[in-house]
Amino acid sequence: MTQRHVIIIGAGAGGLSASIDLARAGVRVTLLERAAAPGGKMHTREVDDLSVDGGPTVLTMRSVFEQLFEDAGTSLSDSLTLLNSPVIARHAWSDGGLLDLFPDRERSRRSIEQFAGSDNAAGFDRLYSQSKKIHGALSATFMKATKPNPLTLVGRVLRHHPLSSLLATRPSPDLWRALGGFFPDERLQQLFGRYATYVGSSPLSTPATLMLIA
Image (cartoon, rainbow, N blue to C red; front, side):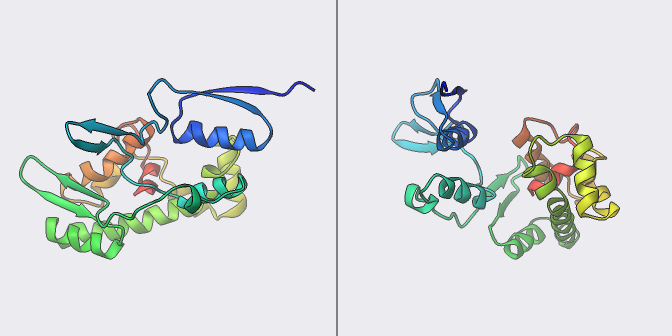
């Protein structure tokens, strides 16, 4: 039998992950990358004497990467050195406002309260609760499912969750309007709305479902 040969274009996180999985399955893989080194968005750019990371801002769902390396016969910790950053990101506005968010949710809440007051801190709590519900409904049925589409998604959610869980995924309104219900301060709408760019979209046209990234 002729061995299958797969050509993958782009050695970012997705291309590297697919290459590992396919090679583990015995498929011949050619990975093409136009840049000088692999990594995609996870690249470092030298500016004068400084090394500037291009991204990503955060590493989410670490367990996915751990499983990928384990399936390949190694471990994430043996292959990569991951260092925890005490600050997830520092956000700045033209009015001089600065807001740091942290890996610890309570610390982020206090930071938001100092930045924009108790109403917005309470909105952050509600956003976290809503995001947790969306993640619970979509983790196995969509995010980790094979070839998900709207019809199979509805069926999978209803098989494993009550109807309320399907409604909790917030297919409407758009993310921007939904965030307005959590945050009176528009700067926080801007901050959490930017997560729509993670899928190449805009908070004005992305379903509120994307708040699960928060």
